[in-house]
Figure 1 (tube, rainbow, N blue to C red):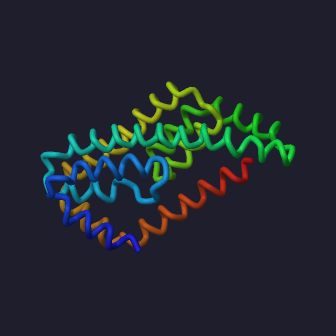
Figure 2 (cartoon, rainbow, N blue to C red; figure 1 turned 45 degrees about the vertical axis):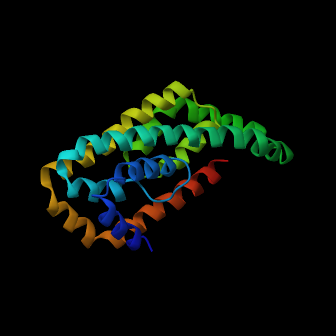
Length: 193
């Protein structure tokens, strides 16, 4: 299912608009899109390893901005729909407990999701939903997303094509693991409520 998209990214990685596409994918992945920007970042760096640091910077900035969009989705969606539903079912107090716990550990939760394959969009939306301090959210996002994308860039810059062969060989497994983590993230949030 994702193989055609991966093949497309290989074709456009040298395109003059590829950096814009990377920024767009990095932005929307942080709030709604299921495909991580790494799918574009990897072939783009492998096509021209001298751009590794620039591409990591683009992915980081766009991802954090997209994370803020996800935060806004959680913030405004909750006020408009979530709160009345919780009140209808008598669960508003339980949500307050969850929000308090989430915000106590929020910086670590955001950082962990930003670095790991855990779907970052789940955390961006949950952060808005619980009204995590936006500065904590931004700092944790910049540090974690920067670490993730610059680590990928560094590995690809240093090792180059052998990494591409490894990714292509295990692409199916990587895709399955990603979607299991995505689904698990949403299930975990539902279970916590």
